[in-house]
Image 1 (tube, rainbow, N blue to C red):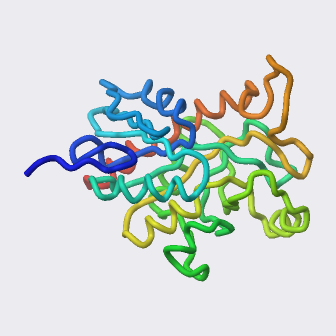
Image 2: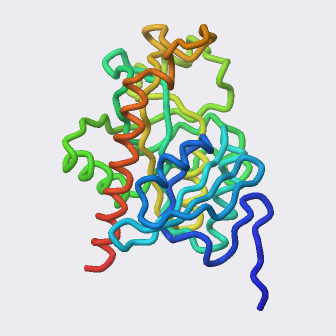
Length: 253
């Protein structure tokens, strides 16, 4: 039988491993792949960049989702058709809590479904929940690497430039930790397909304090370019890879 290629990520069976890390930014895929043994670029098409390799002999891949749930849904659908079983978002988020600062790390347990894509698949009453095994592995990995992580709910929004103050206030008071743009659909689709999913996020702003991505002067290191955030991105990659090792170890016992 001829190998069949997925139309957007341009990968087929054998190109990706069962553990897949999902950054939004295509350039972050290369940063993740730098941690792999024998990394190879599988595809680079329409902003969807995919690398595969190994960590301690365990097969692992990374594929960018782009920005937002519609794009993430395409990636999840196509990855799961060719063998992905565990999906871990490795991204950034803006804090909704004054106590969660730039450069902190959030491990998502679930997501408020304020997106449109997940509702095309399931009614809003269906929960967007990360897998217990993945949450546990990420928490354990953070502890092993001596990195502090906040654990709890996140808010997945479609509209980056639409920060409704009333909604922000309501969700902040309800102890939602941060806002991002992909978790709800990743968790929803994984739940429907009986796959494992999770997310780890580097905090690049604090909305209650008025610190968020905005225009800046050339050369300024603000938002995701802030050195604290860049370090947190490196830390979250390390944590996610260590979590994959733990998950694989558990699957063998």
